[in-house]
Image (cartoon, rainbow, N blue to C red; front, top):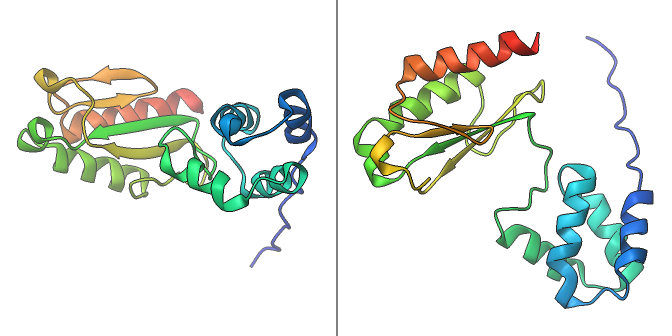
Amino acid sequence: MGATSMPEALDLGPALRIVEEMSPITDSVIIPLLQRLQDEYGHVPPDVVLAVCRRTGLPASRVYGVATFYEQFHLQPRGKHLVRCCRGTACHVRGAPRVIDAVRSSLNIEDGGTTEDGLFSLETVACLGACALAPVVVIDGQYQGQVTPRKMESALRRIVKEES
């Protein structure tokens, strides 16, 4: 068994710089603050939230409450490629459960998960607003309609091939 490495310490410098630029930090700027932190780090790391709360005096429960309420914020790193599968009624009726299962098994992740290599993240959503194309999957912002499990597996393999 290989040696395990300790995770690198997170650089809090960018977070503290953002706090200084946005001062004074009040409840009214929690959302813009979280947006800037996520832009900087790619997600909102819990250690960063705690450091910001210590610096500003904001209660961590309030900041976490906002970060977990809005779907735009992610407390864990996300994959390079985001796969969003619709599970709305039209998509469900037209085979979305099979498509979602194909994505899960192809990537070996569950909804909300990220592959070990950091290449993919999977999200299922209530509706993507493209019911006429059902079932719909959005990969990296590109809508793909009338997908089948086979089409999804092929699309994912193509991305992996492009990355290697």
